Amino acid sequence: MATALIVLAAGQGTRMNSDFPKVLHELGGAPLFAHALASGAALAPERTVLVIGHGAGAVEKAALEVDPEIGIAVQEEQLGTAHAVAQAKGFFDGFEGDTIVLYGDTPFVRPETLEAMQAARAAGHAVVVLGFEAADPARYGRLVMDGQQLMRIVEYKDASDEERAITLCNSGVICADTSVMFDLIDAVSNENASGEYYLPDIVGLARARGLTATAVTCPEAETLGINSRAELAAAEAEFQSRARAAALENGVTLTAPDTVFFAHDTVIGRDVVVEPNVVFGPGVTIETGARIRAFSHLEGAHVGGGAIVGPYARLRPGAELDGGARIGNFVEIKNAQIGPGAKVNHLTYIGDATVGEDANIGAGTVTCNYNGVEKFHTEIGARAFIGSDTMLVAPVTVGDGAMTGSGSVITKDVPADSLALGRAEQVVKIGVASRLFELYKKNKENRGKE
Image (cartoon, rainbow, N blue to C red; front, side, top):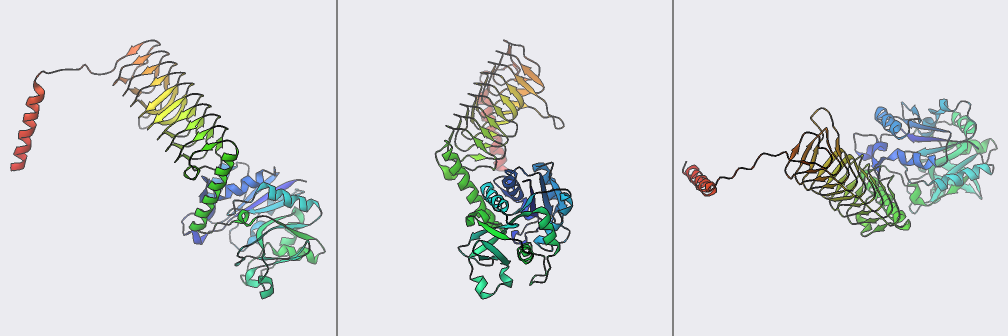
């Protein structure tokens, strides 16, 4: 059976107290809505539509960065969840199959849960709702069941005292045959306390037409919705807890797990050691046997097997470390390939560069890659030795086995197996130091008398 996704992301999120749409706030380094898309993507949907509203331009831009093929529907007025889903109808002409409705502010619904909903649909139920047993039902909508049959969903504000006593609550996630769902949505009214068109009302409408409905349940933690900064912080803590547990389960050593922070797409191989206070931004892959030392920050980087990074290192987007490379303290790498066994150990910036196999980059080296307008490339050959405090003014090439003298400013290519010196000749003036100190002292005393 073909599957499609509709992800609702039109709300403003006033409780976030933000100038930005709620779904653009990040969890694990990705916008909230991207987590719902990722869960649904595991089902290999044929069509995916994001329904946007508040901050539509910014949300659409972010969505197309996540998935350039995604369909975008706009809900000009926020008139309820059924109305929001209806805005996506135009994307489903000719589509035959099931549609799952997810929410851009509910990031933890697992693919396995969605598969269970699909199975319930395949068993013959026209509408399948995701429910959960709430520790504190609060103001959730209630699922009114009769055995395995879901009779109706009642919003809290419209529920009787008896219905409010029910603890089986509605997550809002629904799976239904696509044509049936849109047909039922056309019949939804807004005769309720809020004057909105509620998507859960399709359950009662389906029952009235002789169609069956049921509920699939999941742990309450999966249904966590984010409506405030406090809830966002709680969700980040939950995300990090899950990510750390998964890393440990997969054979990664975290010496102080609670101090390591992951992004939504961090990939770490077996037998990697991650020391305390390491932050992984988006787009990081660490191969087997590497070691990430304390207080390092990595983003958009690839670290080869057996490489060592840090402590206090920063890998920026485009950093590519081959196996056995060494990146030491207070070193920054950006858009650069560091070859096998190469060493960049101290107080150095390597940007827009290629560093060859077994090259050694001395402390304080800088690739001067930017002239204020354009970026330029530096090429450092295999087994080259770059002396401490060398300024490599790109574009420039240092050949295989070449050497630069400490304190040099290199502005021209250095052939292989050559030594390049680019510094002023040292001048020594005997006896001048003591006379200068006396002069400095007199100048200071004279300023004090003024």
